[in-house]
Image (cartoon, rainbow, N blue to C red; front, side):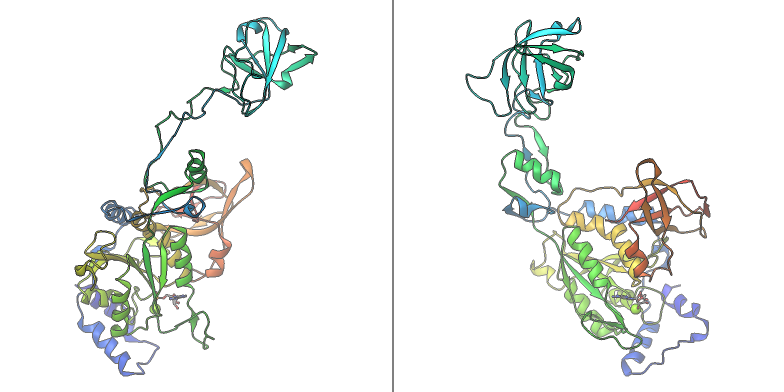
Length: 461
Ligand code: AMP
Ligand code: MG
């Protein structure tokens, strides 16, 4: 039985509190009743299966175009070229401590007295630098300086006493201690980071260390964001008594930016099929379309019906998670694709997600499902979800059947860190999620996690 009709039957006596005020409303109802092409209920997958479906699609996406940008402007972008060591790293055996370069065989008896023959500071060059350390000698050396030939280790200054021309070594060292050998970090010509590496501060520093003032990066995917709902008004508008400001387009835009995409906010779509379709078609012109709202079981949740009418393919139409159960993932042909106008990711159709409208659901489903696809569209290498573990501060009780991602706060320091759920009014509670810094992840077969137990959590991106 098509899910559509199930939905209608599932509502007790069609007691919709909202009268159909306009012809549009009536059209929406008729549309809903006679469009039987909504995806089947079997398309509701477990979290793991739904995630795998997205990852499989992500793996087939071709790398995007490339461009060259200044090093600092590359922060947050995705590397498109191999980053190669232009010389050995370190380029010389490097002292990692201030102290004395010595031959280890001189330290068999302690304390040992050695003659100081010179000093090497970081950046030292030329004839003032002792080329080697001979038996019975020590060379004063600073952190970051090249270790002279013959020296087997550097003794930290804290373990020495200087007496004019000689130094007394009071503690022994192992061979190689406080020296990084030339090329130990990377050999000249060695690959430091490959295309697909997200350019975080460490990767930017790595590029700087090999002299890259500019970098080739992948172009950012354009992600259209379409908020739906008759009650939703623009952020600049004064909402009527029953209206809600559009916050989802902004949480999504911020998440898109963080994930390396370029958000494009479309006008808010009403719960009316023709206007909705027009805006969906516009959104499909970009590399990815994210819809929010209109994917639940209500009479005016038209997103799936409109997409089905556009002959969209649905890969899943629900995941057994909370929040975010009604999440939809699919692809639809876009009008410009055949002409090559939108062949950015090598697709002849474009991916879309229908994210549930509740603000917390929207954010969670982005992190869980949109992220991996968007990363692929941005040219980034795939990455598994990362979970940490922490002790639970207070007991959690839930019903079984869904994998839950519950807004929580991880607090405390060192061995004392603990995680606690944020009190919330459900998946519409934006204020609660704003107080959270992570989600506690409860497996679907779990009814209770006792206080003090170790529990899985996912940090917020
Ligand atoms: P829906 O998924 O359309 O059934 O909406 C679920 C809930 O999310 C309702 O309370 C909506 O008012 C709310 N909602 C939907 N879209 C947005 C949005 N763009 N911004 C803020 N809240 C929204
Ligand atoms: Mg709605």
